[in-house]
Image (cartoon, rainbow, N blue to C red; front, side, top):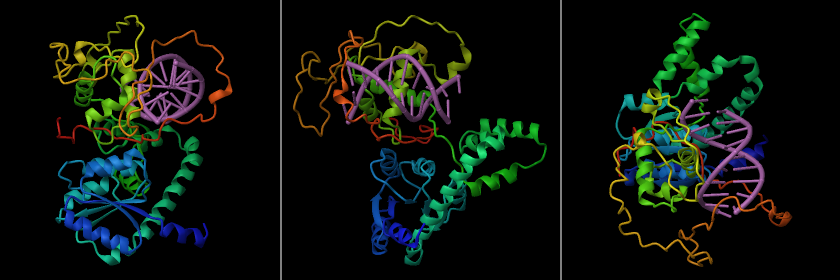
Length: 368
DNA sequence: CAGTCAATAT
DNA sequence: CATATTGACT
């Protein structure tokens, strides 16, 4: 990269600043702006998380007081790490333990709260260094995978912050193959090499419970990922993930992590034709607390359009949710040539989706 | 654009 | 394996 492009990069750095202490937030933001960084500041970790997850804006570095009152600090951290963004942790207290945890989970640097100008002026160096490092790593990745073999790769991918079960398993595996006490060595290595993981949320009973709650509120025929996403209000949980889960639930009966073990019973009930927006058909086992079935007067204040003939597009404000796709059944006679008419924009699914993280709900306390 | 599905990838 | 992603369709 030429000096010129470095120069360009420096002045294009977008900082996501997160701090629930609004005073500190403002002053730090001001300083950052003085350094001519682009700054977006939010107070809550969950807000930052949503910003990152939405993918609507690009960030280069995250500075966060991870001690967010909404308890999403570490979720934010993980999200940022998943997105290969360097995270600088700003702590208001002298909390070595927190700092350690953050570092373990991929934070780039921990600093004491009143941010200093000298430090901020150096931010760009961190960003650049990280970017370079990430690129290098990616190269190594494409080059080295075949050679290195599975076990190491698996280890690196699976040694998430959270799941000790896998970690233990893998450690055993490693011991089996090479009997050295390299555990710590690997940890160290991983710290430097950064933990990279294909993030994959776990649909725990809690999370699924929220899902089901949301679904209960939307009725049959109105059950769409976007609405569910809104209702669930779980920062970082994306529409795609919800859609995927929904698909899964509608197809086979989804089993929670618990009963997954207990009953390997495959009652493959034949699938009937389904309608769009339909509810998933789950076994009772998958209903956590929410008793949806009991009172079918869920339709409390729901005065929606009768779902019938709204077909003629309602030119309602486009900014708000207005639509109800008017699918009828699937499987029309199809195969009717729909010529090249609209190949025009064979677009990707909307980029509102990004990665998420496991144990979303463990750290979540806002139970509705 | 958003939902949906089957197929496929991780 | 459970989830994520994709492509084609409505």
